[in-house]
Amino acid sequence: MSSNKKKLLVIINPISGVGRQRTIEKVLESHLNHNHFDYEIAYTQYAHHATEIAEAASLSQKYDAIIAVGGDGSVNDVVSGIKASKTNTILGIIPCGSGNGLARHLKIPLSPRKAIEVINNYYCKEIDTIEMNNKTYVSIAGIGFDALVANKFSSTKSRGLKAYTEIILSEYPFYKPATYRLNIDGVEMERKALFISFANSNQFGYNAVVAPSANLCDGMIDVCIVEMIPIIHLPIIAQLVYTKHFDLSGHVEIIKAKNITVYNNEYEWVNLDGEAVKLDKKLDIAINNKSLKIICPDGKEK
Image (cartoon, rainbow, N blue to C red; front, side, top):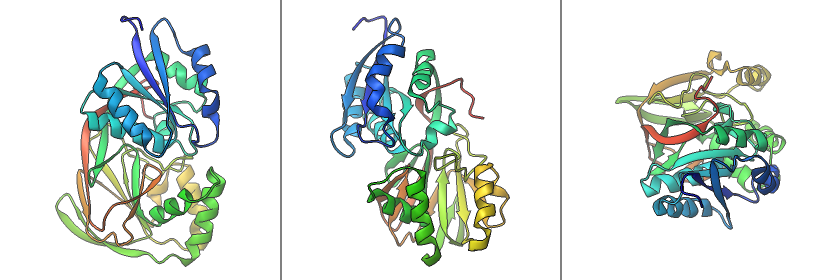
């Protein structure tokens, strides 16, 4: 490797999402600016292998940036490895998952070729990350119905919006909302909710925007509390979600905060950046302001 070039490690999840990752080697060879970058490729071999690879690569100090090729779960794994290393290694994303929530929020193109053009421009900025019971995430986490759906989705062979929607439609009529006890920046409250999201970015993925004003750089978590919605109102709610006006619904309450404790997450599962993770009944959630460097199209979120 030439010392005057940026050095990239490209971590590819070979089974992620909808299959775009299968052509990445050819697209990198054709479209990455080889005058500015040298790169190596590593393929993950098992769940969360990317975390191990990213931590070791960051600690080696051989690489300027680590590029996650996959969906939000793959990005989360790479971020977890970078954070565990306590280095300033930069994150890049070539989105090849199903929902690609963080990439969509940042306006990173879903086309691998165009995403590589973003990497070629190498515009970097610092964004927030969130800690939930010592687990790092970048985009969004949720409890309640959200976590149930993520857990069901993790055990299906199908991927994509159609499979996700089918689970929602089959589970929703029978779901009983829970009453959650919360401490939000020192204020104790109870809320009966279908689900509660703790958002850094604005969406789950698929452009389903649940926290329209969420900003990756504002040092705040958008706590999105959603009541059980009558089935007859779901088409209207869906329209609000996909037009970025979910916060206008009377069934939704959004509170900006820095520190949150949930005392009775009885289900224990959490949807963490699109992946079902079993944590605990008590959840401690805190923002880490501008704690991750990431390659973005132009530094503008909106």
